[in-house]
Image (cartoon, rainbow over all chains, first blue to last red; front, side):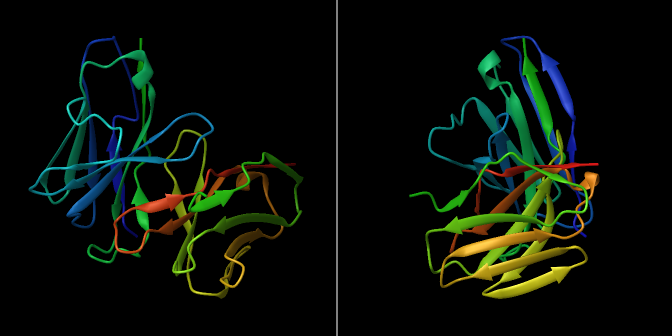
Length: 118
Length: 111
């Protein structure tokens, strides 16, 4: 099955610094990847849709200048949390569709990155 | 009204019990339905993927869709401690890339 790899699995950073999270599709090409955020005991909230070779689409209320997304290849999307603050501490999960172009097909998720900003 | 609603639980059952997890949805046009399992501090993994009404079985897991009631269920037979996780229902938004997720039901199977 489709495998999505996410790195790092956890990171601790100081307030004001930037953190980059990588998401890779290992055995398939993903023209579109999705970035979610999940707070404790809550469901996944879509932050943005990452499109290969073009600008990401951000959900309402998500600051595009704070959460920079780059999707430079068909197998890699990165999310950079810039000038991180403690309220950015969360679990960030990327996903990709195993069958590109089929909007009803399931998403496959990475194992998430737990970000703690001190 | 939310697109997908799910009882967050938590739900605790003894080992071997039959577990029933449920979601309701608002849009009768939804046709595809998914269940994900998420272990603590891990990303969700796809468990079941169904289309339209009816039942789909995979081992100890059965997904059931009742489109007339806009109700979907996941049944786990002979539950095991390893089934302890959060279960999320998900429905793709028609014409878009996104999935609507339920809030997730946290299940604990007690040995």
